[in-house]
Length: 132
Image (cartoon, rainbow, N blue to C red):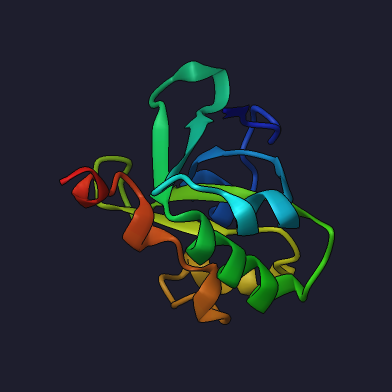
């Protein structure tokens, strides 16, 4: 579980779309050797105004995505973010935010897809099919 570390006051269009974010440290060996069917990443919104938000993802898939984005490392720092699309009640979008440039954030705020597809975690946001 992670709380949101962003400032309480949103100033950019991108920040205004952020509903929650977190900061996780993942160990490569633990992800690779995990016997779990999925890991649940729990994000708590700023000032706990909404949420919690859950990202349910198989550890092997999480590791594959982290390696694709950051290369093979002993540990990975991850910033998963939950964004709304327009209005807060609209469907959510979930991305890996660590290392995104200002222009990438501006493009996301304008509704464009994230530049690196492995950053898009929307498929795993509130994904309960893993429990079936």
